[in-house]
Length: 544
Image 1 (spheres, one colour):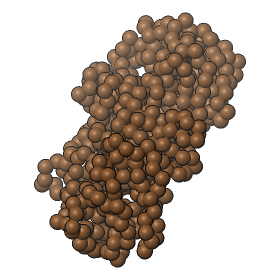
Image 2: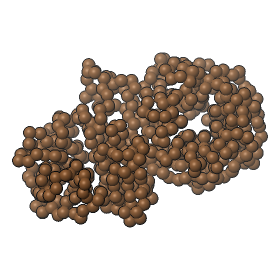
Image 3: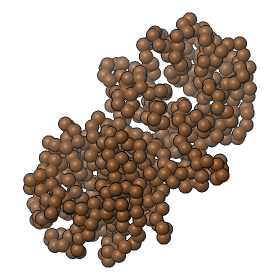
Image 4: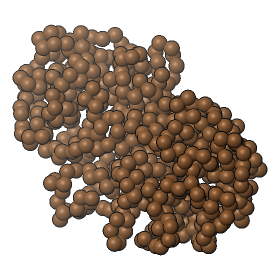
């Protein structure tokens, strides 16, 4: 944490929007399994780095309420409201075996460390232990109520924990109770199996798995957490209740709250760590969010500990540079941040020198160049060096918008009656295109030497400014923005359409309706929203 930042600081690096309610999550080696509460009753596998869909597993006849990967990641176990448990081959996506026997919905599943047994908890008030090889149920454990949680130890296949009627139980594989019960609403083992965490109302307790000795205990402001988990290194514990999740560092003598995540409109349904500092949360608002824990919005040297704690300012622009593997955002405080496009992880940031209306930023040959307009002049700033590279006189017309070209060689300036292109390196005007209509809205996109303007009541117009010294060539008109890439896309605020097939491949609806700004290079799309979120789409994976 950077001194001067509030304790609840965290960055949502990416949001994946789903068509249905995600009810369960499991993670293994950059693959996320998501159980959907939907009419399709399917499980989807997502790439945790890109957020793109890898596969769909179909076979259940009702919603999937619980998922878990085997320790080696080759198998996936699912429990469903159709009263069955299924074992899946992750590589082929096929069902290896279906286990029948429960008389009510299956609420929780777990697979033993040696992958020989499956435990399942159900609304029929029982835990069933299944032999994977034979498919037979070799033990039924009667509980007092619905079994919401059941977990094998990750290092021993000889015992497991369960939660029923807000009581935590411990069992051996023959169904014999090992320890007395105690109060608790959710449980989870540490990755090495030496500890487990349980939540009893606002009290979170971490215990030694063998001796049951209390390792640490702390209170959270959350009432009756429904989900909890350890980070892969065992240093952090996440707990969730309602719309909120807390992350605690349990390594010191006094556990410390390091993250609070509350940007949900409906209850959190599941959460899992994907790295020691990355938390994935599923919500009933049909989203999966990727959070960076303790990530700083600016570099430590730029933080004044005497100043008022920083807050996340609204994002004013987003620049997509997929070829460089980054997306660049700029907020209303003038802070420019660089994000890794594959992981969604924040990389670095810079405080820009001005907060004027018309400005843009782009990574050019490894240098972050910031351009702004003030007093009828264009200023070009090397952000990393903190130097003003060039000042250009742009007097004579009222500037409406400004954008750096996609190839990083020019600055496009939109005036009432024209578009001018200035060379970033020489400061000279290298092309002018006349505009006949003034009912324009803004630049929609730049791509290399091409630029488009958007109109309220007429089609978009574009010009190709080509190389220095050549006259700009007007591009064919189009109702909405088209960019070439692996396919040709028709992009508007309502969705993205493949112009070859006519199929709408992504619907801008719900929380992703009407983005403020859209950037596209034909392979990726970045959009920003009033909520402060940035949506990144990978056409190669999402829209095949």
